Length: 310
Image (cartoon, rainbow, N blue to C red; front, side):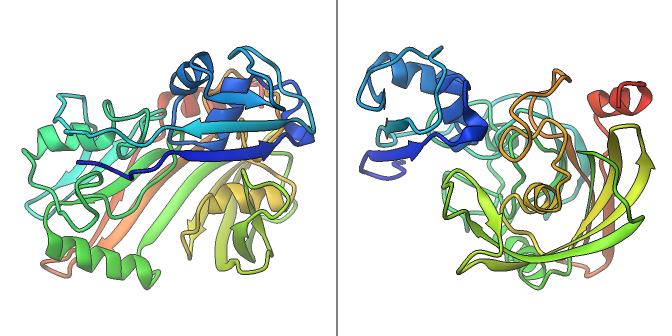
């Protein structure tokens, strides 16, 4: 199958928060579904320039520089099932709920045609996945970011896909996340209501209260206060791109180690934001019975909470 026919050439201005960021890392932040290794290849082949010059992957970008990247047209891809480990939380003939690990991309994209959750599901389900989202995203009815861990529903047939999609559209799914954020939250609980859209000042990000943004509502609850951080639960009323990450940065408490919305440097050696999609609740598409599935916190998260470093 072919995903797109034309190459994409885009230019991004480096803003102050990315000063002295490695070029390959900077590009991986812009394109979160693509790996640093993929961009290292593009840089080596001369498909990335910085203010008109051809750099090395290790080049440290500076504020105000213009980074131009040419993403080649997607190649003809024959997606292959892969026998990759899956942490299955629930499964029946209509759907499967998996606990996605950190660093795993949900569905194939340029630079990530293997090793994705879809490749693993194709093997496990013997290609018995819904086809509504096309060949490149079989079964995928919603997604979470590459470095966010936790619960994800995947549908095995089109009827299940349509009914779960309706619940997502109606905001009737229960979606509870756990995260660690910077600073101490003054209120034990609260609600963040904004709109979310593309940041007009920084096209790498989403932002709150922008023209054309969509309504976004996040309910939060403090679980434990630490010296410099807070352990929190988030309940999504809507599901906008990067919603929790954007909302917490908006109120001055970005998620720990968030490479896009948090400080450029983090003393904890973590791979991306400390965010976990813990609980999913939904009406079963065939029986209409309510099902709630919970993914346990990942090991790195548990170790952080048990440490005295927060």
